Image (cartoon, rainbow, N blue to C red):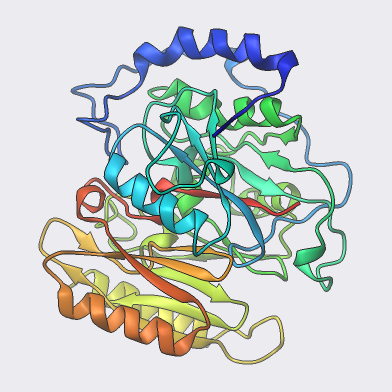
Amino acid sequence: MKTLANPIVRFFFLSLLISFQTQAAPLTRPLPNWVDETRETKHTLSVTDFRYTPPPVNPFVVPPEYAPMKAVAMGWAGYSQLLTQIAIAVSTAGNAEVWMAGGPSALPNVSADKYHTIACPVDSVWMRDYGPFGFSSLTDRSQDFARLDNQLGIIDTRYRHEAYRINDDRLPTCLAELNGAERVAPNFILDGGNFMIDSAGSVFMTRRVLNWNQHLTESQVTQTVKAYFGAKQVHLLEYAGYPGSPADGTGHIDMFAKLLDDETVAIATSVVEPFKSNGENAIRYFSSLTTPSGRPYQIVELRSAYNGQTWFTYTNSLIVNHALLLPTYQNYKNLNDEAIKTLSSRTSYQVIGINSDVSIGAGGAIHCVTQQIPQQ
């Protein structure tokens, strides 16, 4: 195990860790994806809490999830068994490092050379939403993403729970400083679960992003994403329950769609409304588009389930190099087997099922508790 810090900043961030660790959510009662006002306090934020920056000066690119991945970041603030199983799969089949904020010094069956603790406190486990977006200065998107050769850069968007989960919102800044990485920060709220990008710079989100950023017009939202994420096109899809409250609790695109590569997209389908109509709408939307190569999308339908309270989706998965970590659910063995068989036959990934019952009722599965760090 290694601690992800250099000597110059170690003392400073150790002080941060001591200052904020008492605010972290206990492992035995992790916070849900949404705010729990019975346990969380809204803080008054000052102007110093927001360190906005202009977009990157030099040309850059945000790689897709299926580009080469250096590491997967997670926050040790709940669901320790789930996080451990993810870490094992990431470090073995995924051949990537595990960066754990607030984690123990070692994890069983995770090689010490693949495991690093991050000296940054966190409040919740939902690293996808508050964690960093990694970017690189690869200037030509036609180049092979395997040839990224620059230092890591981090995009630090505003977390929609920033007033309740101060440590979570500060995590990208903390991680950037520990790595000596360039940090850029727009005055823009975006959860990572509501962001999907391909290698040509097409970004897919749901229209929930407009609710979070009512200080901006739709055109300004699009221009912000283009400026800070190097996007060429921005697609805004509806979510289950649109335009009202999201039926899955988040309204994130990773709850019903996932790019498996530049040519293939997985869509979660259902026979139960509003997920039935949402899946059908997503299929129609992607059917109307062409891939970066100019061909129609190959659409992979993944039958998912809704029990009246929880949306058991199979798109909330994580691609780590040649592995695909798929959420599975105890009460849906037939759907689990079908999803694994479908993805194994339609892609080249090694599909690894990981039971995600403990977290899905709180608003997410494997994708929601992880954030990828691109290869440099």
